[in-house]
Structures are given as C-alpha cells and as structure tokens.
Image 1 (tube, rainbow, N blue to C red):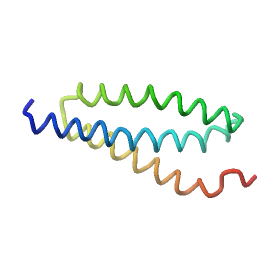
Image 2 (tube, rainbow, N blue to C red):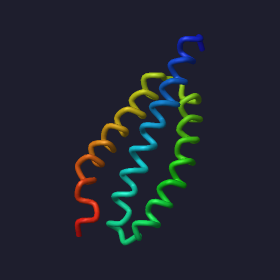
Image 3 (cartoon, one colour):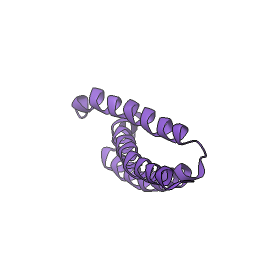
Image 4 (cartoon, rainbow, N blue to C red):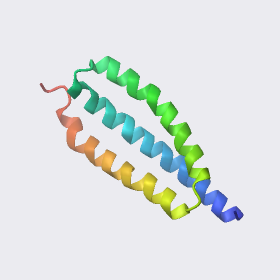
Length: 95
C-alpha cells in the first residue's frame, strides 16, 4: 500500500466509520422499542454494540483489499441509516 492509500483508508474508516456507527446506533435506538424493548434498555444496548461495531469496522476497513468497496460499504449504509433516522426520529415517543 502506498502512503496516499493508507491515508485515504484511515480517513475513510475512522471518520466514515464514526458516522456510520452513530447513524446505526441512532437507528437502533429508534427501532428497538418497536420489538418491545424499553427505551432505556434500547439506548444502552445500541450504545454498547456501537463500540464493538466501530472496532470491527475499522479492522475490516484495513483488511479489505479494495478501497472502493470499503467506501461503498461505509457510505451506503450510513446514508440509509441517516435517512431512516430523519424519517422516524420526529415520531419517537408519540405513541
């Protein structure tokens, strides 16, 4: 790997992975009460799983050979999760 590719992977996995993890944690906090979990428990569970997911995502980002695949596998789920959060967040807690 060249220095530019390593820098791109570092920025993509750390910053993009953070955005993806935050979006997935937020989406999980919204979705988990739908299956019957209490709101406080869903926040706790999603937060704890977020730390594990972020670590695995960074490790995978440096293991994967294709930088394009890393970019797509981080950006597409992040966009989908953010759209879910924006669509359903105003309705949380309104019965």
